Image 1 (cartoon, rainbow, N blue to C red):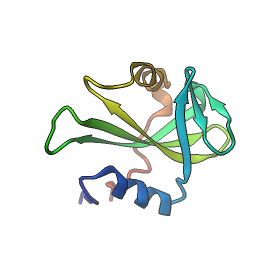
Image 2: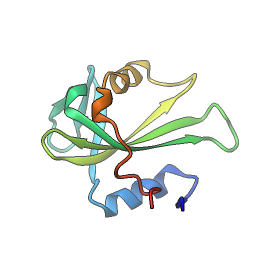
Image 3: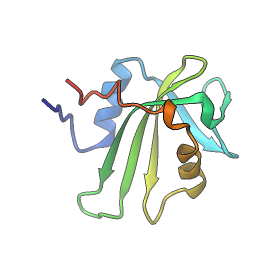
Image 4: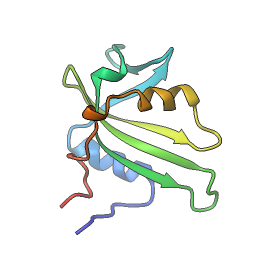
Length: 112
């Protein structure tokens, strides 16, 4: 049975935070940076363990992907990336460069 928490990203973020995904990241200069430790991650140091896509209810161009992330040094957090016509192309390319072997859906809160 597929669980649906909400249609808004914040509801999913809050559920993942309860599971320990509390680190926050920003994308800058081609790296994903932990906002607390300031460590800069390269794509091969990132493991996507779940992701959720959203489309704005009032504006279909308002699209985003919530990535649930574990890192090579065992940090856990989330990153929200806009996609579509207004996306950050560099950040999108960064996530495309994460090795396929580092991507799964093993931690998705929608899995039974």
